[in-house]
Length: 353
Image (tube, rainbow, N blue to C red; front, side, top):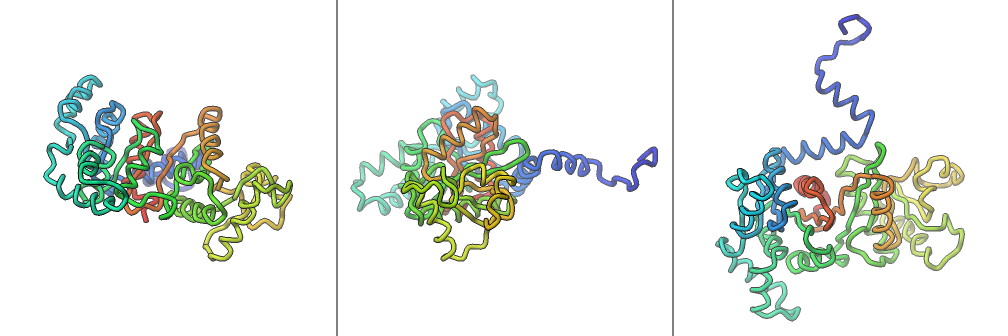
């Protein structure tokens, strides 16, 4: 501008810098958008595992970054001790520590839980143990009663165990439309893989449900969904009974009349590579897919972890979609920053019904 080489003056230099970064890495604008939405939402976020130092670091970062209030489920003395060990002793006064012993709502929680589980083999003693001693259940009960706006858990226990506990309070299973979606951020590109959490071995109807849930998450992230049902075969070759459901799933979406692009079955290279797609001019996809619906949860897990370990991809998720309240389940290997990112996703209510 000073030399006259720039034809137009730059009014907002900060916005110009952000625009340049977004052009270099499109994923950056999406992440910044999530951060901005979380700061606007100012959610009261429940961190269910207050005995883990990573969770406490994430809770402190959440609060100090201006995203909202962090509610930590745990014993006050243990939380204080863990914070001091982590060099965050000054954060003790900032966080709200909640547990069954200091809440006024335990009886309400137990009544609610008993009403849900009384015909599933749970008696009053079982209900007390769950509500008062299981932090995943207690946190979910807080969320169900509006005593928090979102919930992050899963750092200390396997996802299947955590999902089972959450199901005591919410309908967070395949039968009620829940879907696990993981976003892979790599080299300026975002690809969503589903289902990575809920469906073990989906049939074609389930696969169509997964596609719809993943499309909703994609739109929350600012992407226009293009779904590929991926397999080891492409449009019927080679023929395999194992691939048949991937071949049938697009027909289910045809009947439902959904409003996003989808195609399959196809191999991953055909789904993601424009040159490989050119060999199939009849394909309904107008460009590389940004959602890969995979045949089973084990293939989803392999895909995500391979990209993370070998490709150095950033992983966001699994994002739990199709549940009444924002609940996000981290992995046991999550860092404090990973946990913070999942809290931000929960704050933005991505995937909520």
